[in-house]
Image 1 (tube, rainbow, N blue to C red):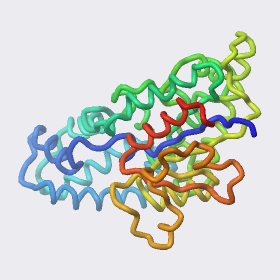
Image 2: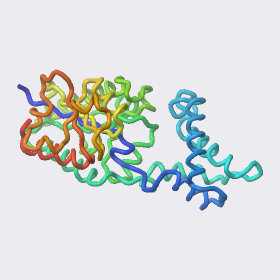
Image 3: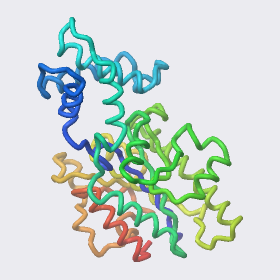
Image 4: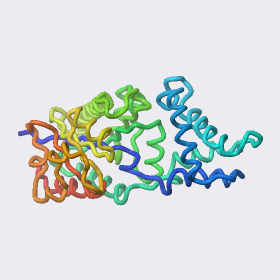
Length: 321
C-alpha cells in the first residue's frame, strides 16, 4: 500500500490561537484609552453581539457579498457596538475603530495555543528527511481575511497562498513551492464563499493542496531532489478544530478524518461511541488509526492542539506510515 502524503488543516480561532483576554474586555479597554467611559465589559459584550448579528444579516460574509469588504464591515460593527453605550450627544473617537482593527489582526489581541508554533515547525522539518512523504499544512476557517496576518504576527512562517489569491498562476505556485512555510495555504470562508460545515470549503482546501503538490513534484523533478513528494499518492486528510458541529461534522462529511480539540469528553452521546481519546492511541501507527480503506473517517479527541501535534510528530518520526 502506497504511503500517503499528509494534508493537515486547522481551524484558526480557538484552535491555533485565542484572545489574550476576553474580547469584550479588550474592546472596553481600548475604548477607555480613546476617552470613552460609562459602561462595563458586560455591556460591551451584549452590544457587540447585537451589532455583529445585525451587520451579518445586512451584509453577509463580512461585507464581501455587498462589496464593502471586511475592514468597513468591522468598522460598522465597532461603531454600532459603542454608539448605544455613550449616548446620542457624544462623538465616537476617530481612532477607535483603527486601533481595534489593528489589535485583532495581530498578536496585540491574540496569543498562540501553547506549543503550536514550535511543534508545527518541527513537524514540517521532518518532511525534508529522505523518504518521507510531504506534510502540507493549511487553515480552513470561518473568518474574514485577517487570519494570515494574525498567524504571521504570532511567529509562524505563513505562505501567501489563499483561496482565490496568490495561486492563480504556475509562477505563484512555483514561488510558494520553493519556500519552507509552517502554513502552506489558507481557505477562509470570506474567500471561498462557503462556511463550515459546508463541504465545499474542505474541497477547496484539497484542490489547493493538489495544485501545490503537483508544483512541488515538478520542482523536485527539475532540481533532481530525491525527497520530492509523490504526486500520485493519496492524501491522509486530517482536520483539527474545537467546534463539534462546524469542525467535526463538517470535516467528516467531506471525507476528512477529524480531531476534536476539547478538554472535556464530548457530550453528544450518539457520537461518543465513534470517538477515541488520544491517550487510547499510544503504540498505534498512523495506518492503525487512520486506515486507508476504512469504512468511514476516524474521529479522535485531544485535550489540546499541542497534544495532537506532539502525537502526530512522533508517528511521522517513526516512519510508520
